[in-house]
Structure formats: C-alpha cells, structure tokens
Length: 366
Image 1 (cartoon, rainbow, N blue to C red):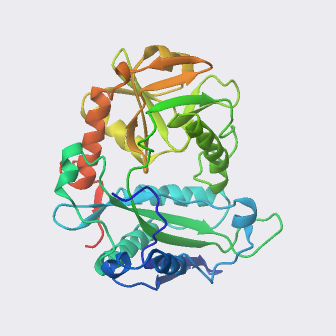
Image 2: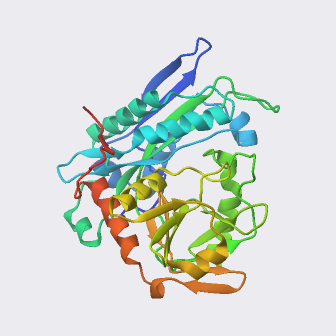
C-alpha cells in the first residue's frame, strides 16, 4: 500500500496563469518520465533524481507573496480506482467551488470552478493513459477499502513575483497528482487530545483552505503525535469552550440521544466536502443530524461515538478524547456501529461497490 502523501508526482501536471484580459492561460506539461514499471525498477537514487525533476517548475518564481507571506490556497481531492479498471473523482466540482471562494477570500482573481473541474479531470486522465495510477485490488474489499490506494490531486495557487506586502494580481493555479494511501499513523492509538493553541479566530481566514492556516495545526499535531495521540482538537479562540476542528479534519459526535452533531460552520471552520457528504449519508440512514455549537464538556459527557472526516482522513473514529487531564472513552474504545456504517458506505461509493445515489462520482473522461 502506498503511504500517505508520497511526493511521487505523476508526469502530467497542469498550470494556468491569470491574464490581464481576465482569461487564464492554460498549459499541460509532461515532465520527464519512463514507464511506471521502468521507474519502479530504477535504483533509489536515480528514481529520486527523476522525481525531483518532476517537482521542479522553473516558470514559477521563488520569491513571491506565497512563499514569503503564505498568501495562497490549495485543495485536496482523490480519484478512486474502480473494479472495471477506470478511475473516478469524488465530487470535484465541490472542491472547485471551495477553491474559487478561497481565492476570492484572499482577494486574488478566482479560478472558475468549471475550469478547475475540467483541469483536474484532464490531468488525471493524461496520467492514467500513461499508466500512472493504482490498480484496483479485490483484496481491498475485505477491510472496507481502509487500506486501498487512490490518486491524490493537489491543486494550489501560486503568486507572481513580489516581496512587499501586497495582493496577488496574476496568480498561477497548478495541479499535480500523486499516489496516496492511509492517512493516519497506524502505529498510534486512535486517541485525541484538546489543545489550548488557536487554529483560527473570528474575522480571520479559518474558512479558507489557506496555506498559512496550517502552520499551527502542523506544529500541534506533531507535538501530540510525539505524546502518543493520533489527533489534536482545537477549541474556539474566545472561550476555549466549543469544539471546532481537528488538526486537518472536521469532527462529528454521535450522542446518546441518537443525534449526530458537527460544529456549525463559521468563518473559523473549513467547510469540508466529506463533512457535507457524511451529513447527507447519515440523513439517508434516518439519523437526525445537527450543525450547531457543541461544548467540549457536552462532547465528552454525551458522545457514544466520535469520528473525524476529511479528504485525507476519509472517516476515522476516535476511541477517546483527553481534555485538561480528563479522558472520555467512546464505545469501549472500539469503532462504533454508525461510524463504521458511514465509513463503509462512503468508501463503497468511492470505490464503486455501493450505489452512488447522489451522483458524486465523476469519471475522468466522458
């Protein structure tokens, strides 16, 4: 199984730069490569040199508003192998809409969602035709696709040259793809702990998938992993009372009264695509859902199951949460029935073993 976020960029990449007339100058670029089989057989140092060439973009300036100030945004989505040998993307237009809004929030020209979807489909399709994609394996079905591979798609914005404090007026949008596997470290128990660090403040950029938003979560998550926790949970900045997000994922609480609660979207919470999808799937199953403020005390006292969602995480259960020395264990530390049902349904839709009733899966080619 591929490990999460390997920097094994596939050969075809996409680049588009905003033009003064309001258009986007698009380019599909074929980076140096051999066949997948030939690359796999290369000595490690030779393969590393080849991959380094694919991660080099001479046309992109080193010193700019993105590298100097974090003035940029990105997306993450996946293409999933199907049993018939094809690939399908999961809700790519939703990611396109979110990236368009992120760029608008950063006061730069916004990449249109339709252009985003077309570019993502085409760059994945071009790599597919070269053979750069994970093949469907029947054994994945045995664990509900928990160990299945997929193609990770990373679109991101990149500013024009600049060193003073300023806005990006002529940004690029770049799309690269890599193989990806399971996100969370399987060697760590599914435990979470709250942090008093702040991810986002009211009136800020917490709702944008903005580069700068990830600095604090990365630092906190690595600190908590070193202490034996899989995930860190952020509370609100004002009172340190209400649950907001995990380090890179939305969070859900299945309460004793049968209600599935996730924090209400505000400008401090990222509107996750999987978050939105899980709410729909839960409602399909007759589960009452609520998007509202939830205190950490209510979460600890009333939850029977807790899980997080995200493009990378999918659906991942939490066996416990520790808050200020107090630990609550959910469902005796095992994955809960609803969590597992939602996980298997979502994965099944993505890999084609469960009916796609909502039309979420998009083929890479018509």
